[in-house]
Image 1 (tube, rainbow, N blue to C red):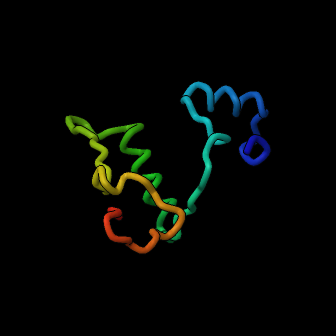
Image 2 (cartoon, helix red, strand yellow; image 1 turned 90 degrees about the vertical axis):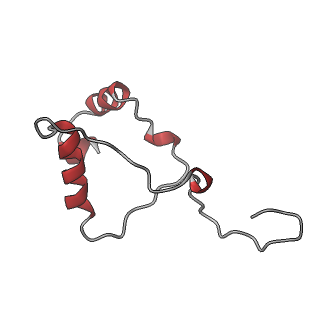
Image 3 (spheres, one colour; image 1 turned 180 degrees about the vertical axis):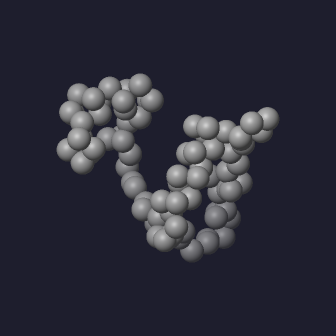
Length: 84
């Protein structure tokens, strides 16, 4: 990442620490297949960095609390007495 952005490894480490990022602790990573992902990401980040005047920016999770865990493996078949 440092080479790609033209920064030193120390600079990248400082940035990660400043924002509390710990990518080395992630167990999984899922890349979006949306062809417009980069444009959408720029729009969202732009709202946070420079919100419109007299506006509020809210973030809403699409998943309910029950579905909060992203599953990497398929759910096993149901058995009597065991909830899915």
